[in-house]
Length: 258
Image (tube, rainbow, N blue to C red; front, side):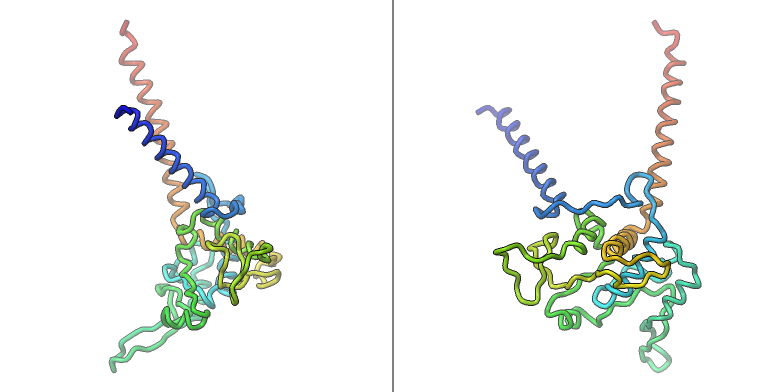
């Protein structure tokens, strides 16, 4: 076999492996296809639905915050999703943050401020494991970007609980979820119909809660998404205008050339 043939075969094999891996990732690591949604933030001009993201924060705070931290989000970030500064301060004041040392060299607790990060429900990882049968609940700050599929993955996972297929054994204390790696997850189904009472009167079905908290976690993971979309759109418009100008200049410079 010639060297050129070996190179071509290597390129073909590499391309096949990449395509296969991409297909597996798109399907959630070999699991079923994700339950894709028509998110408002999808596409080059997508924006967050403020009402939905606020509802998602309510779901997080009432359902998820008992186990999952959100350590990269500060209370001062909440006005970005439509809360007023006064509302954000009131939300922060419901929590306590450690501060100090004081004049006696002691740490102390005080009401949280806008500059504080949202507190973890546990003092440390060992405490978290002890409260969850040995499982460590992940921090949710970046979960929507850390998983293939983003918000679709979060939504699929939340809505993916079901009885295990016949012949598929589930360990004691575990739950079957086709979208979780290994299909067995320690977390019990977190959302259920009327699990929360939405402040805006929206019907709190399990499906609605899953969509709302998925949108909120997408915002938490990429709060500058709208800025990035606006910058990208402006850049494309600039490049289009620049291309037209270059074309007009070219025509003028070469109009007398034969």
